[in-house]
Image (tube, rainbow, N blue to C red; front, side, top):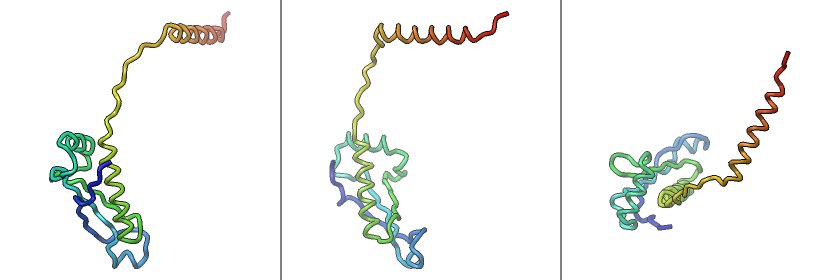
Length: 130
């Protein structure tokens, strides 16, 4: 888990939702922005992986953007936004394990065929014969 807090930039705006009159006058919603290409923390390979995994969240300027307005305070929203963006980036860096193709054992195949045969016989016995 790499820490890239110092590369983040923030923008505040008025939040919608609960908060009463507080919503109308205080900028509590926080948008955190991170320019992927300018990052000094990650290698080029890691940047490629992040760009590929988060391509739907990165805009045309190459900026990963995330807006949080869960809390009533700007400071709390900023903390939540930092946590979320770090979690997103760190999850995108995880390399999935390669799947090894396996063949079912002979016993398993025979068991499956036997159960199919039994079910077929059961259904055949349900038919009414004249």
